[in-house]
Each structure stands twice: as structure tokens, then as C-alpha cells.
Length: 144
Image 1 (cartoon, rainbow, N blue to C red):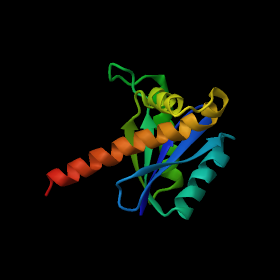
Image 2 (cartoon, rainbow, N blue to C red):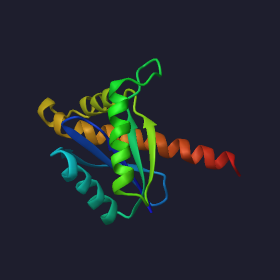
Image 3 (cartoon, helix red, strand yellow):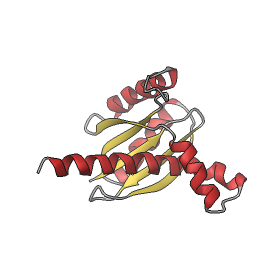
Image 4 (cartoon, one colour):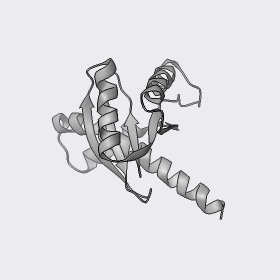
């Protein structure tokens, strides 16, 4: 089974997938939002195709750790995911600075500005997911 990460945005979602061992996150796709049921349908489609058992939803937490209006929107969307995919575990994970880091990585890689716009969301999702996978591995290692 695999983990799907969603970098939640108003206009686009970035998707990333974890490998079956839960070790490596890979940028998957940028999805231009259509709204409501169509967005959920795309998530359901990916979950079925990729045998996803966990969805990690990036939570836009303020720099001081407080949750603002953006985090509330993400949590509301998370509730919609839970209703649509009741057999899949939903986890919120702090996404602070993921987009900034993604931009920096793409700039360093020499990706042009117009191309970065089409990649940044899925790279941000990859960064969020890798953080989650690394934390999960560390927690499981400590339990041994």
C-alpha cells in the first residue's frame, strides 16, 4: 500500500506518492482544480489506481505554529476526503515553507519561471510527503 500527499491550493493540487516501503516520496502530478465532486473524484481515482491506504494533507500552519483561515479550509477539505474515502487513513502534516523550498529547488535546477509554475505544487507535495515519511520511519524505529 502507498501514501498519497496533497498540497492543497485554491487553484491547484500538487500530488506526490510514497513508494510501497514508505521510504521515498515522488512528485506525481499537478491537478488544476475543477471544484467539488470533480476534485474528490480525481483523488479517488489516484487512490484506487495506486493502491493508496493513507492520504497526507498538507496543513498550512502559520510560522508561529497557529492555524489560521487557510488551515481551516484544508481541514474542511480533509473532512470531505474522509467522507468520500472512509477506508483510507487521513493525516494532516505541517506544510510550512514547502512551496518556498520547492521554488528554491526548481530555481537551483535551472527550471525556467514559466515551467516552475507548472511544477512547484507537485514538488511541494513531495517535500511534505518526504517529511511525513521520514518522521513516520523515525517513530517506528523508536518503537522497536
